[in-house]
Amino acid sequence: MTTQKQTRVAVLLGSYRAGSLNRRIAEHLRDHAPAGVTVDVVEGIDAVPFYNEEIDGESAPAAATALRQSVASADRVLAVTPEYNGTMPAVLNNAIDWLSRPYGQGAIVGKPFAAIGATPTPYGGKWSHEHARHSATIAGAVVVEGIVVDEPALEGDPLANEEAVQRFLGALDALVAHEVEVAA
Image: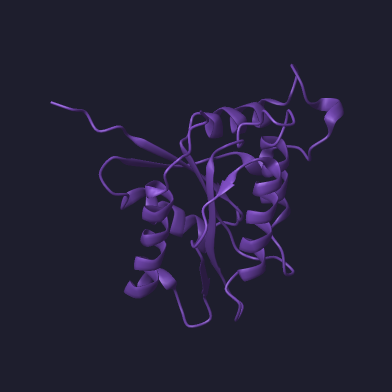
């Protein structure tokens, strides 16, 4: 009997507001993940100090070390984020900064990555997700092409819309299904 490998997806939230729609989306994905998939919402990235090389290294802050360990132990990384002023929230950008270090060896290096979410604008987070994908690429992640879920929340709760829910779940499925290239 073969045992199916469990795929672990680390979720980086872009909003830590009480009642955050994007947290609710992440929790929905966690609660409805397909068999063989574990979705872990990485907690505490809002407590990670802004990246500063002088405080990094062996004595890096505990919150930054926990973030790195959580992502290092994951198979995939999913950012679930709104959009702030036409870009990703600072908390998400800072998390990617910490995950990119040490240069070329950070916890995010080589990990398949996608960004999705919802925001109360007509653009649904388009720029935030684009900027998160760009930053993650520079940090060494492997952005999975074709995963684009930019949900505007103007017409109510996207989690109450079955079509939107299926897009979120489809994004998770596509991220998990992405074949990781192994160096020869």
